[in-house]
Amino acid sequence: MESRTYIMVFRRRVALILGFTVLYFALEIPAAVYRPFWNDELFTYYIAHAPSIRSVVQAVATGADQHPCRST
Image (cartoon, rainbow, N blue to C red; front, side, top):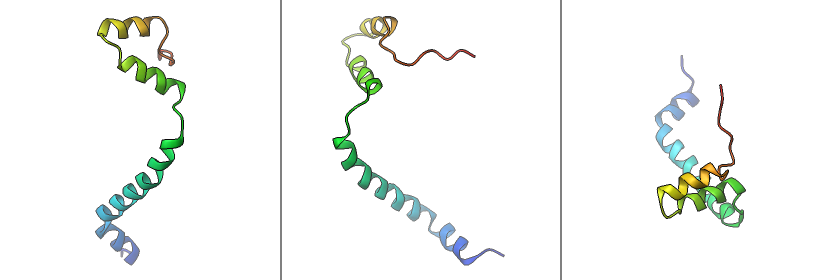
């Protein structure tokens, strides 16, 4: 037999997920305004605004990407 709490949560699952999502963004967006970008985010921003694909390839080839390749 299922508990009343489980049934209540199951019936309102979409509303609960939506509520938590709205609450998360309501709290996170104001905090993000005052938080500076990290290095990898700045590199991504500048590479994404490169004038051509050739510029992107050159930037990545010369070490602009901060994450090493994954070798397995």
